[in-house]
Image 1 (cartoon, rainbow, N blue to C red):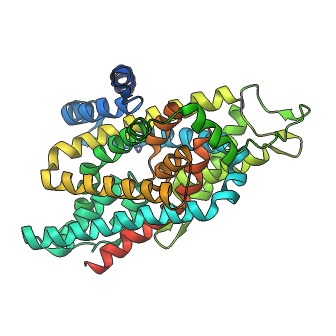
Image 2: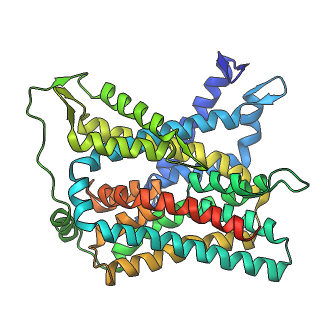
Image 3: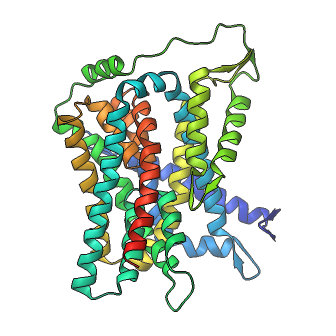
Length: 408
């Protein structure tokens, strides 16, 4: 079997598949453990993946080696990207029918909240850079590269990570790109787990009645009437074909670059699936997959994404971990969330589930949305996520580049 210019044995591929499903099985078992009503859920997969990466990354790399080259990082990237495509395309289809009505009603709120969350994250990042430079006397650009990498990890934002790497000084005695990557890996752990726990703990501390909150969400984002009449041409019984077409279109749209910015695969697939989910058909052809298909793909995609990102993150976390960097990452995860939640509740007057869905989107947190859907007991929270996510995506890329430039 040929992969990235080398030949991988069937044994090596089987070993990779064995590892992926072992992590998934153990992760779901961990996620089932509940303490006072709070559990990790699917994020348990991420914890097991991190542990696997920390302690077993090298054996996996040795198995996936052709000559002197290891293909483990590429193999994990395939798993991660496949998961992202499945997850965000499913979320877009699910949110599509009510998305534009919800966006029209809360458009200003979503913009303000998305910008505020990223702005607070950027300001806290700038504060950490100045503090690190003054207290530890580190080179200013080196501190900026590390801490902007921490910002992208604390917001679990791949586009911000890519933008930061592209903005640092290239070449020279210091590999600033590698420093950005280290920061991203260190902060990623709490960036995932922190938001996952936040969306579960807030409803409990607020003593929220989920039945009442779901009713408020339905008033805010009423289900649009179906545009399907039953006489459409169905490409296949489950909607796999239409799902694949929309995902391919999303990948194509996400590949376009405007300077250092692009929608990426995530943004492209989300936007295209929102549009197709809204219209549901093109002419006589049905483009809306079955609801059961979307739910399975959403969960499967989240699982693959967490495994791919978690194993690679675990290896970096152990190798480069420093407590001070981890603390910086915690600050850059918690401050935007807490301030954003308070602002959305008392200033924007968003109901609880719209608030938390927007927090997930503003934090660009894919895993937290999966958890929130389970906590809320409704798919409609995906609408607030999908509305805030593109705003936060653009803002975090711009803020990351700006911070690198001013501290260079």
